[in-house]
Amino acid sequence: MNPFTSKLIAWQRTHGRHDLPWQNTRDPYAIWVSEIMLQQTQVATVTPYYQRFMARFPALADLAAATEDEVLALWSGLGYYSRGRNLHRAARLVAECHNGRFPRDPDLIAELPGIGRSTAAAIAAFAFGARLAILDGNVKRVLTRCFGIEGYPGDRTVEKALWQQAESLLPKDGIEAYTQGLMDLGATLCTRAKPRCGECPLEAECFARRADRVKDFPGPKPRKALPEKATAMALMICDGEIFLEKRPPTGIWGGLWSLPELSTDSPAEKSAAERYGVVVKSCLPLPTFTHTFSHFRLHIAPWLMTVRPDGKRAAEPGGLWLNLEEARGAALPAPVKKLISAIQEKP
Image (cartoon, rainbow, N blue to C red):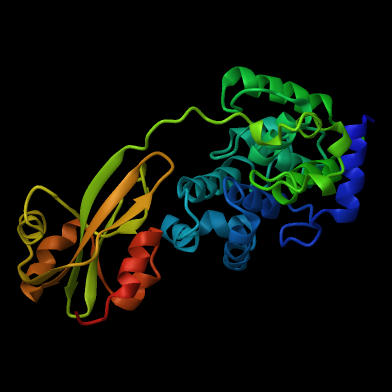
């Protein structure tokens, strides 16, 4: 066993994380849910969501039997909602195509929606002891620094070199401790900012540390200005109820319930009347705010409207009316949930 691998395993067994809610199990379902939630999201954020999710859907069959709305309601606020939709789709595929048993074959795991090569390897390693390499963001950072792999990890050539490096380091035994050790090291010591190199078990082997170039790895993503977009949202209130529309299944906030969006080229009151057939009694602007996605910034101008009861039915073909308490518990994007939670029941 090479020094990188042996030192990492020894460090993980002594200093790594051993008490996370999804650890100390061979249940592939529990491991799979955690790995999907942990994609691009930190452990501290994931933990309460994971615990609520598993309490509601303790087994794969429970998740497969749920509706998408039930799944997304528990996902609300965690972000990257396609993960929740894919998790639900995959559960139904396992129920239909694998007799409800999560597949052991890493290639079959990787074919499920939302599971790529690295996530499939992590699930197979922790659930079945499979000897496979992982390559998530934390691992890429560890490997680029330790082995001086130049360039942006998202570049195809650099990623290929990283996969080759990752596979060359696999131990013959102890794959679970090794895999968890890579994750733990990247999350706790070899962090993006302020890495704790003096505590790292691989300090002597690390190219970036020896060359005093830790800040140079991994190579930065080529910078590109985020596009700016704008929309207006209507909080249409009638008799203590608010009108919500379901987003298309793909795109931002796909499958979630959201506030109706209005044209920014005409007055909000007129736009709401023309699009939804409502009669607006009052219309007040709320403070504009910005929500940043990974690939653009969205400037949202909310309008608080009271509408006459005779206009409710006209809007219904495009959505539904919920009382404010029900609406707060629906599968909503985080900024929409904050908006609804901030308004009083009778504006």
